[in-house]
Length: 101
Figure 1 (cartoon, rainbow, N blue to C red):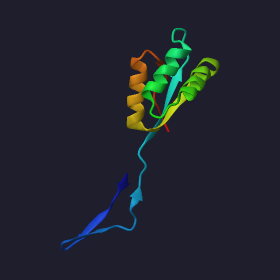
Figure 2 (cartoon, rainbow, N blue to C red):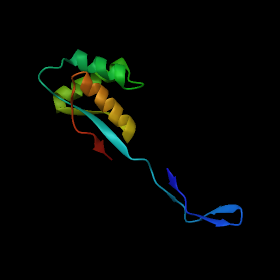
Figure 3 (cartoon, rainbow, N blue to C red):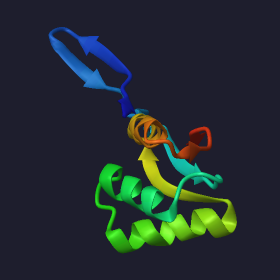
């Protein structure tokens, strides 16, 4: 996202050379370990909800959740993170709060 400072001269609008660029906020989606979701359920949910998630990567992440207590399953624009977080949570996965980065 760019924030433009402008000034008008007659019918023309000029951009201020001091234009600043501002990045869209990003976030991390983190799945937490719990005592009731199976590896298979976690892997299947990740594969179904996270775009481009391969079967192999979803299983690696399910193992990481179990062995480490949590795993970052997606990172990107905050609004998409909210969507994936909500969808994973609605499938019964235990989620950490969305982490802005």
